[in-house]
Structure formats: structure tokens, C-alpha cells
Length: 130
Image 1 (cartoon, rainbow, N blue to C red):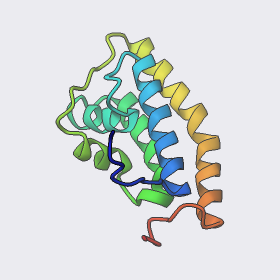
Image 2: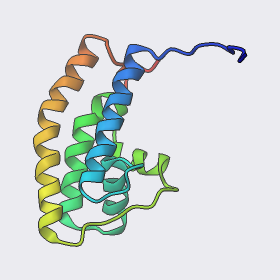
Image 3: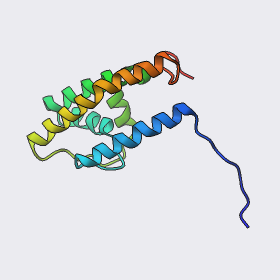
């Protein structure tokens, strides 16, 4: 018989963050990225090492989206936290452009959702840490 050590429960805020991260990693895999890494970390890496305008634009969009909960530099923070991962670029310019378009279309409503969650104190904002 196994002894139960204890149960752990996630807060509503952590549950939401887990959902965002899982969706982020899944979308990264769709765009031929490492499934264990997020689009944010990949974008932070590619913006730093590739320096293409597409990755730079994508970084600005993602950073703006997550600014209320992470402050400045969301993509570079994500890359720093995930720096031991392997990051894949995209072989074609159209692949990068398609990823940028997808990220832009998803980030606009997501930015509104995040700002609403911070406003209603469901998620802690960057200026209001736990």
C-alpha cells in the first residue's frame, strides 16, 4: 500500500498560467519548434541571435501582450528561463511570416484578456507581485 504524502493544489492564477504555457508550447510545435519550449522563448532567442525584422516584430508584439503580467522584456525573460533548450529557426521566409501573422492575430485578443484578468485581480500584474 502506498502512503499518501500530501496533495498539492494549484491556484486559479497558476492554472491559467499553465494553460497559457501549454497552448504556447503546442503552437510552437505546430511551427516546427521544440515542443518543450514556448514561442516566447524561441522568439527571444531568435531576436537575439538571428536579428531578422520578422523575429524582432514578433518579439515586440509578444512583449506588449504580456507586459501587464511580466513587465518589460517577456521574450528575453522566457529565453533566459529556458536557455538550456534547443531552439529551431524556420527554414523559409513564408514560414516566419505565417508564424508572425498567427502570433499577431492571437496576441490581440489575448492582450485584452490578460489586461482584464489583471484589472479584476484574477492574475497579479507586474506592478502588483504576490
